Length: 283
Image (cartoon, rainbow, N blue to C red; front, side, top):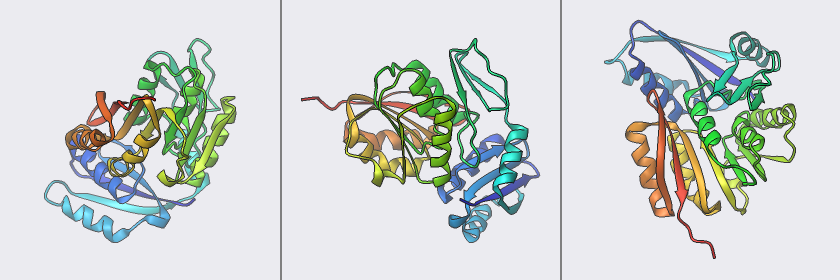
């Protein structure tokens, strides 16, 4: 699948302004970002890129900051070269080590995840993914059935599997991500990880003890009712991909009618990951 890169350069911008811009770009369909002090790289599937929508969005920020931007098509080999050049190993909570195939292993860390994302997203470096990983490290996943929505590289499902999860299903709307999930499962010796291409419409009528959904606010709001249908009584949902204000209250309000109770949340910068529990009764 072809991706388009939009690189923004700023004369002067505050971190919170970059975060707001990222949120608005997410609403346009951009699904991965690389931040620097005075620049931002954003990536979107070429098939859904709308240059006029981008122009309107940039114009809406004209009274807050000035930016220039360039739009380029990203070739797979160029993406891989850039990723290999910039990707650094990542340690989460002293117990989860995320590395690429070209990094040395660290046998001292209990859970090691080897990721080769190609053009799929989710290496653990973004705050939303790292917070989700930290949540999974805290959870009892032994024998639990897992649904990983918008799975990207499959990193969340892979960590759950390494912590003893049972049935595993990863879903992503991007075929490149689906291929990446399968390859990363093999790299990590994870057997039995099912992968489906699509969105909420392909979620099977099964019961899941744990659901991971690191996507963005609008998609989560659209899909919460379906998650509630397949979440087992007493099950747990981890959400991320949104901000504390106003997004978290919007997520809480959307969950409440479906028997999903807010438990707690983590915050890194303006990004949030939140834990919700099912209060459905088993019969």
